[in-house]
Length: 276
Image (cartoon, rainbow, N blue to C red; front, side, top):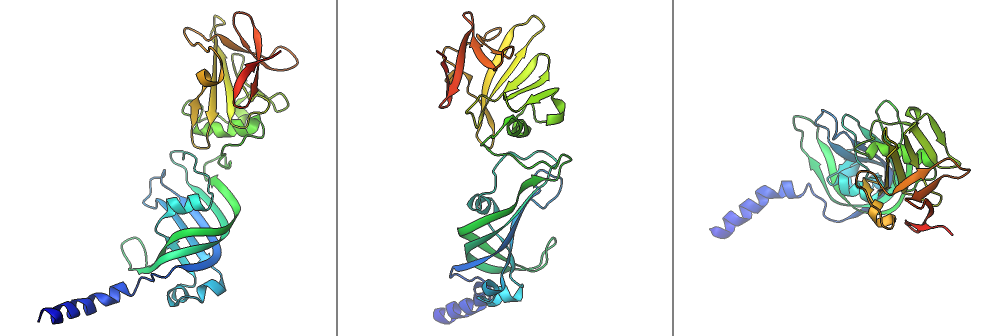
């Protein structure tokens, strides 16, 4: 009797189990990533694919949905596809598009619910090849692409300030002068930012108060957030009622100098060393 009950239960559950395809599928096609997690919607983060004809033909479920599906692990999938993992601004949505050859597992049909029609879902297990056709970009007013680590100029560093808690609202147009050749950007008469020669992720931020007291900091962008690395990059750095370093833009080349001797320091290999 017990065996009959067990068999009946298994037969009752078998239609549900048959919806999931366990064997991994190697497929290719176009992908679209959407991140609405910072907007007042219920959409959240999604990563969906439209597979090519050859891939679609490999599964009855894929054929049923015309090769269209979304993945159950969009955050992990975004990392596998190399989508920039930078902080998202409140109220903004983000999108990116590309092509990929990848491995899908756990293909299954999800039933219709209050938000979505019946749909196909799988887990993105691996990416064999990838190409980004539209880099991650925001739908906010400036339409600027999200910047990751790897500054080519002071303009890239300014764009990355959108991830900075103190300068997120700044754009290039807010600066009174930006000189890509020297790496210097002046926000106003008392506030400058300097991208040292050879730096691809480290920015010098400098202000003076009304009494002319210097406040210099060195911050590094890792593609997600800014970190203060002043003490790690400037030997003997002190910040107490002002700093013992300042930014000198009066000469032909912008210099980071130390007090009281006004010695010049050059950026190299992730830190500053004394010139000469």
